[in-house]
Image: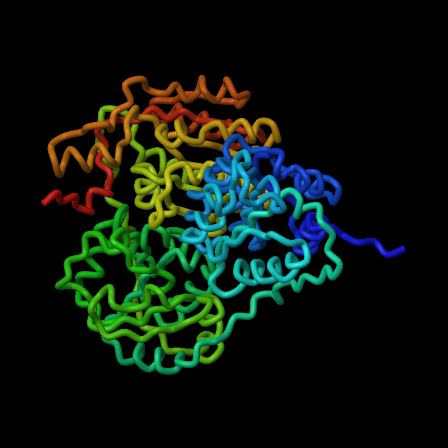
Length: 545
């Protein structure tokens, strides 16, 4: 007897064939058939506490296992709650499938609760600017072709999020020709002008590599190090490029831009004639603190997409298109024995700040010393994230993710959860702040419910520190930046069932962090820090005229 699959059966079967084992989200009537089908085909559905947190979790899942992240929300407000997470995934090149529901396609045009069609709030249109592809599926027979297209958009070339709004009646409608063509793996083409890049590099008097987040997303850390060693080129990293190279690498001069270090700035102001930009859009956070008079005369820019290639710095550009790791591998194959020049960086850290109370800098250095290999650190957006960029030393085998570009507060909470589901063997640490925890801290309860051992280090100073310090320095005011009722982080975490502890000096933090590393449970550390520590994010000025 011939069995006719319906839309959700085909959708979940396709996800299983892609190796997906978890999906994230919050259920509702319009999406119920899909949630039930996850259970039928052994995809574990992870119930989040807010759709935005679930969307970030799907992003962390995609980042970690280099597969597709999946997040589900019901119609109307469930879908609109996903917009920020979709934008975050788009700006960070994370392949995530966002699936939302709608009551009935057969009744389009009549008033429907939580209407997601063009007659209501039109989720497909809302999601278009924040995804690579977004549509409502109105007929079951068109679904295989639409899903094929969506997966190809999400998982090939410059990866990113896609969105399908699938009404309830379409979900359960039959599909007579259930042919979905899976993306054919990573077909990464080699740039045609690599030889010209090497010719220009050989002519350069003082080349420097500026490594951005594209190195991290491409997984090109080893290739970047080998390239730098082969041609003996010093490396600096953008805020998002932290983790492109381990901190003690002999050619690493440290981070630059917001969260940057003076040694990296000195290098970029020492007469660089050729800048090799690897996986960076050269945003204001990456270039903060560099005077235009020090811009290099020539730039070789490696990037997978063309939107931000050239023109930001007024220099002579050579564009190298394609996946960064693929192109670096090809260069190393073509030029394996370049003569090396003697050039070694020195330790780049300044002395720690001297404050009355515990500093974030001290906490970051302690974390760098104590974390084991096979650890991923997700730093949330805020002053604490830029402190981590500057002060957290990364050993070989330690990964780091920080979104300094879209810069959505609280993204790291969900990212860390999704990453742990993707790879249970790795250690996962989320460095976040009290402001972020106010937003999406309830996702910690997901960790507790699933007994997922993620460590949350919460930098707690009772204020939105980055905004406060910037406003105070550039305007003399601090309006709206101080929490009149501060958060008792340890008590909040305990109320959700997590192990927690508070600490206010370095010895206490080290003791608690050591306990957290050995607990194999969700653990929240409430780190009470000095309110007056100056974040390096002040390198970017605020001008009101």
